[in-house]
Length: 115
Length: 112
Image (cartoon, rainbow over all chains, first blue to last red; front, side, top):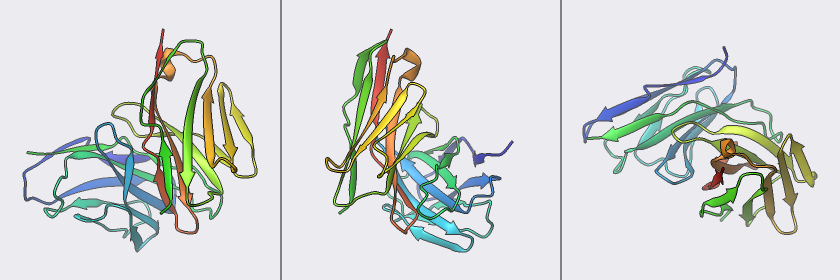
């Protein structure tokens, strides 16, 4: 089945440690996204990538880093510089059709808790 | 700055009634808007897309309108059911940047 997979579903991290969240898609989509969602809040864009080896900062990139070495993979690293990392993280992908506004497909999310 | 806004207050309605949710945008004119549904602890799921030259779009019990004069999109669910209870988000892709931005979402609760 085609889709977008995030792992792990739940993640616990000690304060001061970096952690990497996985996002893999087999939909052959060019564009990929990372969002953060806090309780009762909307989605805030962290990073996005239109194509392999290229990515741009979203609205809340500080304390996060990404890579896009393969079309199907877009891992997110939450660094120790992120002051409040506990949140629900969502990865998404979409076909690259400029101006067409195609839909985004989301993974099931990773809930990160800093302990 | 460009903004996309939704009513943060939850909408509580009786089963069978029509639910109407609002998405407002300021300081820009999007070529289209997308609507998604999100259930607790899950990723959003795409429902409908409406373009600026389309006044209305329908899909089963769902209807979306786009009023460029009012800078607003309305999302309607007719004959609502308790299973429609979820958070509904509007989104748009900022021009020529592939930056997909979401509103804060409106939670809908349909009482049986």
